[in-house]
Length: 141
Image (tube, rainbow, N blue to C red; front, side):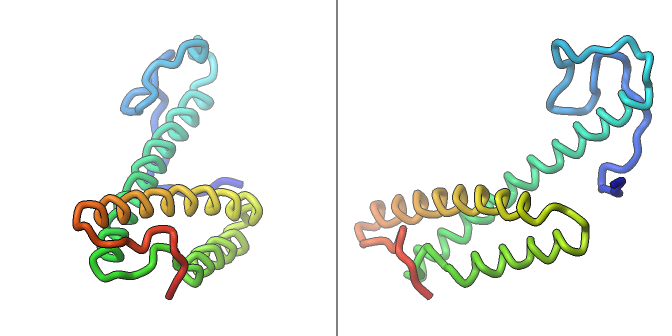
């Protein structure tokens, strides 16, 4: 199903390269330029992937800030109600955008597990630095 993204439509890249992407020239994927439409779509996909990676990085950085606040305020790291909210939002997105709900559930499980790991590290490090017991890994409000 076609979708519109922030990356938008693009002109085709030079054969063998994907300008403006983190991927650049990928060994074994060089084409002879016989299908400019395919090359353009691949270039567009690579730019979308770049955007996705930047967003994942921004999400993790935001979670680091959240962990710092939780540590400072003595709030438990694990917030089951918040995880449920995020998962419900992803499920609703899946329904309204015709995306496989199981895929989004698994994707969010992975992202949540990673951000919990990062938050736990931040809270533990801050607790060690301040000499106070942290709330990392605990379930609470």
